[in-house]
Length: 239
Image 1 (cartoon, rainbow, N blue to C red):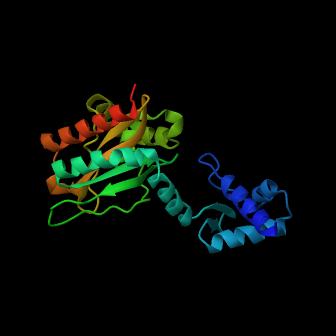
Image 2: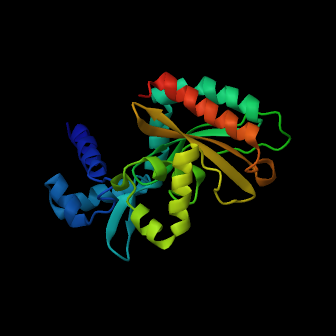
């Protein structure tokens, strides 16, 4: 029973965090557990030791640790969406001859849940599963910003206020169905398109390649991406 209680308490601590409450104080965690502060501190110390929690000593707050992202990526890799998307990603890799990735929205930003770099290219681009992408600078992030509800993207209002160009880009994405103006990062450029299920954007499908290989006028690659995303959406039952 003590071991089961320990697991339950650890789960209660981790479950107390959410996109709207990403950071908690020790007092808040103590209230969640309904124990003494000393007991709560003991649990937070154990969770920090295995990277399930992080502690910011400057503000005296806890947040979820990097190991949670690894577990989340493993969980998402088992999602039906990933299984359904696999043959579509295989086909797009053969057409584009570049790396193809699938990302979902985790409440704050896109997270990579599937990656296929099985190309014949001399230089391959490999993307780590569980990688978290910028919600406004990445092509995948901009796709989600264009199609999700404003309250689902917490930083969007601030970013739009700071960058009128971003608002124009999001409108262009809604018009064309693809994001092609993502910044070049480490010599790589990404184009991305939304994947829908029941009228909701549930994923972003993207082609990642050296910047010289992905040009805005490369219509064949862009068309292949849009066609694949549309076909996948149809299979998922887009309304």
